[in-house]
Length: 340
Image 1 (spheres, rainbow, N blue to C red):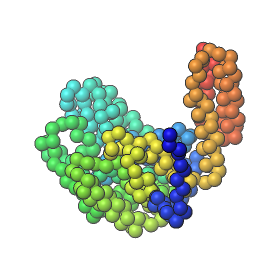
Image 2 (cartoon, one colour; image 1 turned 180 degrees about the vertical axis):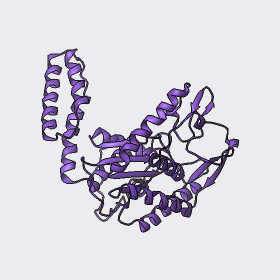
Image 3 (cartoon, rainbow, N blue to C red; image 1 turned 90 degrees about the vertical axis):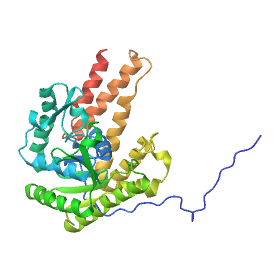
Image 4 (tube, rainbow, N blue to C red; image 1 turned 45 degrees about the horizontal axis):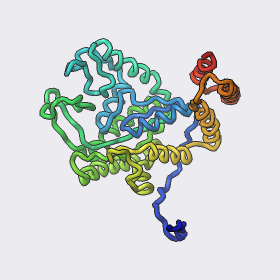
């Protein structure tokens, strides 16, 4: 029988490359946040919302390329209202080339409602948003041959109806210089954060994936030079590529991030972007949320009832301490379980 030995790593051997961070503007619960772009924006936005931040996420659905994201933001700044003329009918559903498939519907009025309601809601908020986080996923864009317009989602329509093109850093910088100038004119207090998704686009091979990411990184660097006080780069891409650097931080498809990697990046974001008071608040709420997520073997037991009553008490104390944060949804969940 073999005995087990603990292996000690000498202190001079660094098995990871920690990412260094610049000084970021502080984010707190009084701020309005808008996250747009690739899956990373979606993941971080969900975590922020779960931790009681006022955060809107992807009003057009997930968007991957810089041009589609820029078009979406320009439409938010405009008075654009989608009509049936903006939709296409394919495989039994109405779609928008600017929106994720979750906005599609077999009924044209439902599709338009799915699109226009979030658009109108975010349009009312955009002038008051404190932090806009944009995540670029790929430099590749698809253009509809019939209209010559960039599309955000092809909706599985045959490839021969589109032309594919890799943006250059100059194209992205030109488009975003105009966009950021317009955004900051309407909202001078806005801070714009850029990130690059570490999701790997393997369709063209790993070399072309790296070229695409390089284009995005170069463009962001140039935009930071043009807007040094108002733009920031959060190194989510470098955290995965250089600090984590391991396939165990990817999902089964080996291209998307695992939940562990997302959680790791979230914790880095919390540490470098939030004040001590905000971090303390998050820990307080996390303890309550974890307790609420607990499901017992017997929901009708007296023990579980007392457990729920304790959660209600903690929530009320939390609400008194932080009156600007809404815990009504979670209180209703507790009261519903108590009535069973």
